Image 1 (cartoon, helix red, strand yellow):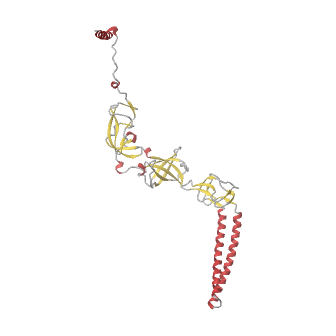
Image 2 (tube, rainbow, N blue to C red):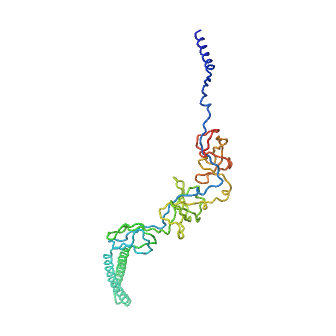
Image 3 (cartoon, rainbow, N blue to C red):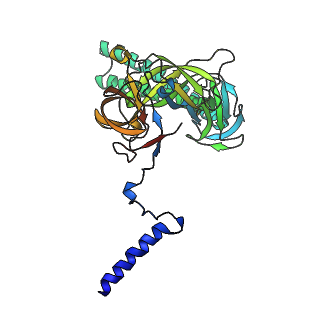
Length: 371
């Protein structure tokens, strides 16, 4: 009986609350699942029918085709240093000289030794010729002729040895003079007048600034479209000054870490007032002309950034924006350039696609597309 009365009191209280004082009845909140879904903010892209040229660019560095470290060939004290860093030199120009006092003394000694050896050879030649004549007439024993022959060969060998010693001494004098092996600019100077140097001591750095090339790592998906001999346009960083280069070689291997191939392009000498390139400079090469597609690749196509497609191999899907919602669309793609794929099947040219296929979306998810 008491339980019945309590229940009736609760009902009466609810009715009184709904009717009294003109106040609205309290409506219980709906479960969270019944609330309206908050739109997911996304960025959308439309497939491109033609790739922009900037995706066909590669960053590279300039290096000299001719560069050398010039070292001393002999030992001695530097008595003359004729050039400094930044000087332009010509092939064969004298750059430095070593003290040649001892080397010239050695040359004089070697020359005197050679003269003595030549005189001894002349005497031995006359002696053997006389012995040969007497041996034919029987006026001299065979042993005497053999002795003369041996003396002649010894004198001949000594003369050759003396000549070699003279050549070596004269080469030492020549080694005391350091000359430029090619035209270029002095980039470093490691020794001064008065310094003692020995063979192998680095004295100058020399670079041929008129013979430059660009080394650029090109993505493997692009390199097969680049041909040797193609002329590409480039810009110097950070000035943006333009220049041209001719593709000289394509690497035979692919870097396993970067998936790129080394391309070497010879810088075409600039005309008056053109960009001045220096070894070590960073540049960008534009392969849009050298890598122009041909055949079937020249036909119309739909291109999307790689990030907009969730794909393994040629099969994948994209999120298409339809009526403010995400719709999953299966597509067939092929990789054509770094960062881009060609949509072969499954997508129209006017459809908008979520730019990031990795977002946690579901079919029907409400979207708010950023403008």
